[in-house]
Amino acid sequence: MRLYKNITIYTLSLLYIIVGVKHFTNTDFFMAIVPKYIKWPQEAVLISGFAEIILGLFLLHTKTRKIAGWGIIFLLLAVFPANIYLYTSESAREILEITKVQSLIRMPFQAPLIILAYWHSKEHHSEKFSIICSLLFIPTIIYFILL
Image 1: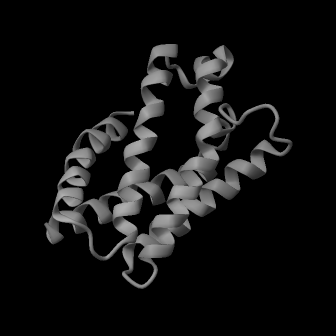
Image 2: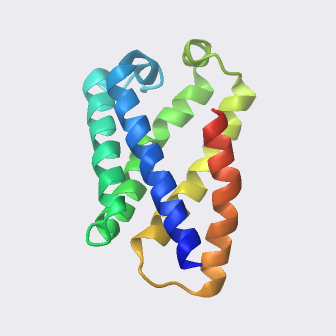
């Protein structure tokens, strides 16, 4: 189980880093889903991208993994309004070229990412919780790779 957990850690670390870099290379894409009440959308995109890169790097190291796990949880909660905005904004969906149903399907996948971040933040867990996390990882990673 330890090997599998490490695979999930390294895979998600890489994805967080890649998505974080995309915040800088494709800023307009991410700005499209920033809710209108955010006064500085570009800055919000760049800050969240920087956070994803740093947290992805922190996830790689056992000494900083707990910070990374909790940081990822807080980041996912902080950016969740962007998912709600994407669902409620036709113009945002048009820019991202997704349907309302696709934006709705996207929202629940934040929960497994939060659970996986919690799992990664802890050195030891029950076998049952580790199995649940292992099972959550597979459809979650498939979904995000296909985005």
